[in-house]
Image (cartoon, rainbow, N blue to C red):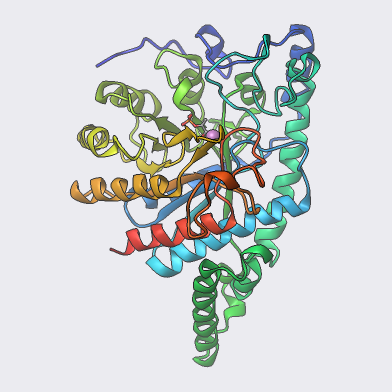
Length: 451
Ligand code: PEP
Ligand code: CO
């Protein structure tokens, strides 16, 4: 096995390793100042909450629950509003209800939200009409607009990302604990534009059944008002911990356990482009006690996967490590089985989750970067089949979506066509499922979970 010599870990020991996908900060002194400021700011999450998520993920690893990790590809500083947060939460709550109710499996809900501001890019520069500028790396770093000023990496954006994450988390906590996520409100989570669609009718039928179940409980003398789990939802935040200066500035020692937690989110993950075993990201992640994810693409080998498991989960802690495979509908049946078998033999109680988005991206004839719903559901179908054939639990799904009525992914029940992509193509980065397609996908996954 590939073994890497690891000297003692500190929140900044990653600086001794090559760090892929980091912005070029033109003013290092300004960056240092910002990171100092951030390291004095309050943590965004409690270590105790992150531990609770590890416990819930341990149930997923044991085959007793399902993980739904969903949200934006890249959050935006511009479309930041109560409305946008609520709409994203609504679709995730709907999907979770579909999964829990139709498949009878508890769903662990984790948003790609309140911190998903940094993007890895396939090229450091973008060239348009002969002009080359730094690539857009997410609002935490620079802006999408193609101009020199907009593309300059600005450390003040790190502080803005912190504040937007804090405000987003604050509203999410209010919504999920303050009555909005109450099961008696399942009917209210449907978006206006989705309301008349076949998926919405299917959802309404299910919501009616939930109403009936609640009435039945009341009639038998169980007061739903006493059942906290019917009124509140545990909702966790996550993002790709890409810009390591930001993540290590938000790393704190938990006073209860003495362990380090990256308090920028409950869960953080390592992307496909930054999972090098001797790289800075793996070094940073091995020392934080949060539940963590690691993406595995089509080229991931058994050797690499085992080495990553050994570094990231040396104690074989259930729920600590989620392996998020993003292999592609075409290759998953061939690539995934040896990985599952090797990880199992090595004794790592990981969560296996499927990201059916990132390896099914292509440029359509109209020139738009897109994904087809059939391939997305296709990769998930194969993911379930492979796991089932190996008696392994297909633990979760990881998707990019928005509650809005966008036209970014092809197909789905509305059968979105290539010439419709231009209508509302709004993503700053990757194509996301819209509200209807997301609901559709949830029903598809619920069917797979049931059979
Ligand atoms: C992402 O999740 O947005 C992403 C870039 O994924 P990956 O690292 O799998 O390409
Ligand atoms: Co993406």
